[in-house]
Amino acid sequence: AGNDAQGDEPAVPVGIAVGLGKVRAADGCLVQDNVLLGPMIAVTLSKVEAVVVHGNLMAASAGGVLAVATDGLRVLGNTIRAPGLGMMVVAGADTVLEGNAVNGSNRHAILAFTTATSLPAGQLRIAGNTLHHCGAGMDSASAIQVLLADPDDKDGASVIGADLVLEHNLVADAGVAPDGKTRAKLTEAVTLAAPRVTAHGNDIRWDRPLDNADGRKLLAEEGGKPNRALVVTPLPAAGLVLGIEGAPAAAAVLTANRIRGFAADTLVELRDGADQGKTRFLAVSLGDNAVEHWGPFDMPGAATGTVVLRADPRATVAVAGNVIRGPGRRPSVAVDGPRQVAFAGNATTGPLVGATGQVNVTV
Image (cartoon, rainbow, N blue to C red; front, side, top):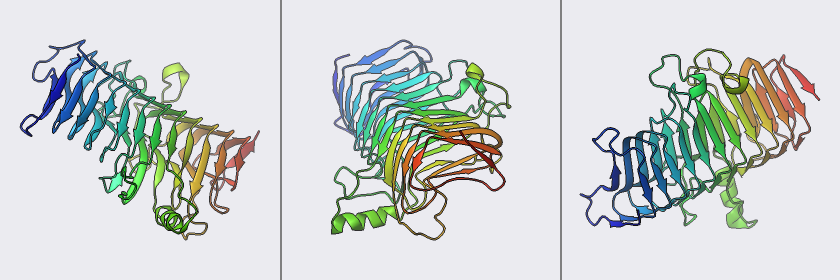
């Protein structure tokens, strides 16, 4: 703790390395209050348990934190100003990334994949992070990208080992460089893939352009792209059994989020699973969100809706207490798949639409 590391030569790729090549040799290590500068990855962790990375300043060009096979990892309260990758977590259970600030990363601020296991403590929690201007160096930009699966289970992640929780994060101007000029060709600010996803209290946004000639030009350009603020994709789970607290295996809960931004068609989307639509969420809750969608009023083929929810025909879907403002009379919420949807207490500029043959219940 309390060190000042600076890599002057590219031959020094890592500022602090924990556990590399020595399995379990540094379990319980604390990496705290260091300043890490230069052409390197600031902190690298491998095959260790219960490591805490806390309160460090990282301005390393290649990236901030790289963790592989690190169960019980806590990355807390760090400041990362890396033009490379902010934080990357691979194959670790019970991981928390909380209270970190990432600014100006030209790739992901947070990238995590194959991070669920069949262990009961398989949750990945991403909370209270502040992420500004991340992803502008990518053709398809994401500030947060997570794929939560169990690579050792042919049926997908176990129900109790596949909880992804995203809460109280600020994701601002994803895909836009700090100078405001360089922009990604396409931006999906937050992309999440898991059997069970909770996104609560997040603020995902772009600044609305000024009402002048330059601002209107920018709005037309960005509003013509198929950007997304939030994309959630279900991954196969081991059967249709009940999981933690009796919830279905495949569930998406999106509550109390504030989302605003540019998109040609859809701003928030629950997609079909990667297995050609065979996997869809079995329970969906969209509640108390505030969504503001800027885009063209009339665009051929773009009538899907500001929020699009795809779910299994057997799914229970509740859409309640949302305030959604979109362009023109485009649907504010379009639901595809389930036989029954409950709409209640929403304030929207456009209609709430269920698929043909559904029974929509207003309560």
